[in-house]
Image (cartoon, rainbow over all chains, first blue to last red; front, side):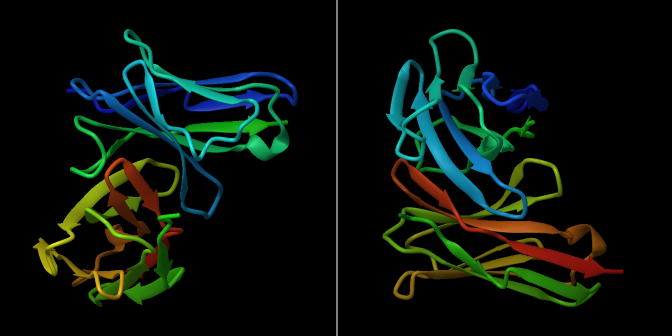
Length: 115
Length: 109
């Protein structure tokens, strides 16, 4: 039973380009969370999705950032027109049920570097 | 915001000693969880304590929860060099799960 898979593990982009980060949850999990982590800091919540629905995007910047979790395929976090401040590790986590009922299972993260 | 806070920010101890990390949170919770993160890796779940529980054990881990003070502590007994990592608490309420800034634990052999 594969864990949460994130790709790419490392991504380098120049300012103004787009970054797409993918997350395949654990088998049977229909709830996906995205977090962002700056070096030596904790995880900051970005967005919580269920299949085809955004449940809570209160942690996402209003501009340039978007997330989806389609009926088929991985969840995608998309960052348009990246800036240097977007450089961070982006972690995806999944759970079989909604939050409030148990642990989250994390991927190894995608590390975005903006030149 | 649910964001929790851990203290200390960093802790350095000798192998065999106990390590205690504290966490505070701001609002009501369903449960509180502790996670571990090795450098450059994802988070791994350690233990979950529900809001109606006061203490929980798992191997060398002991977690306490005081909902009146909105605080929790994680105790790692008989620490090992392999316990060196960052430890995060996460407070959970319904669909909302928020992490603190973490405690960086170094266990010297």
